[in-house]
Image (spheres, rainbow, N blue to C red):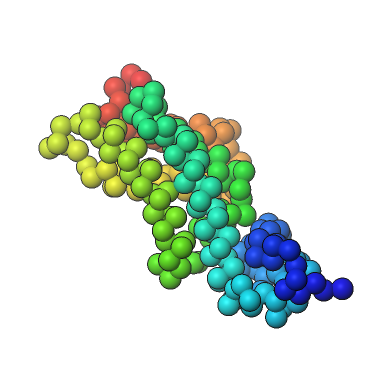
Length: 203
C-alpha cells in the first residue's frame, strides 16, 4: 500500500531512490514517477517536494556538492602541512569523492543541470570551488607576481584534469590502464606544476 505524503522523510527518501536509479540507469534514465515508485509513494506526494525530475536531481547534486566541499576542505586543511601537499590533497579528494559517491557525482556533473538555475545548488557548488581556489592561491604565492597565473585559472586546470581522470580512468571510459587513476592524476599535476615553476625538475 502506498504511504503517500505520510511517508516519514519523503524528501530524503526520494533522493535515495534517485541515487539508486542513477546507479542503474544514469541521471537522465528515469522519470519522477519512477522515483516515486522506487520510494514507495504516490506521484502526487512527490510534487509536494519537487516540481519535476530536474529539481530532484538538483537536490541530489546539492547534497553531493555539500559532501564534496567538506571533503575538499578536510583535504586542504588550511594549507597544512605545506601549500604543495595541501594542493595535491585536494586533487586526491576529487577522485576519492567520485569513487565513493558515484551517484552524487553523476548528478553533479553528468545530468546537464545548470547550477545557476538552482540557487541552493549554485551556492554549495561555489563553496567547493572556493576551497580549490584558496588552495591554488596559497600555492601560487611562491611565484613572482609577474609569473603568477590567476589562482582561479590554476584551480580550473587542476579541476579539469581531475575530472578527465575520473571520466576516463576511474569510470572506465578510457579503457584499462596499467596505472591507478591516482597515479595518473599525481603525474599530470606534477608536470603542470613543474611547468609553472612550482616544482623542481628532479622532484
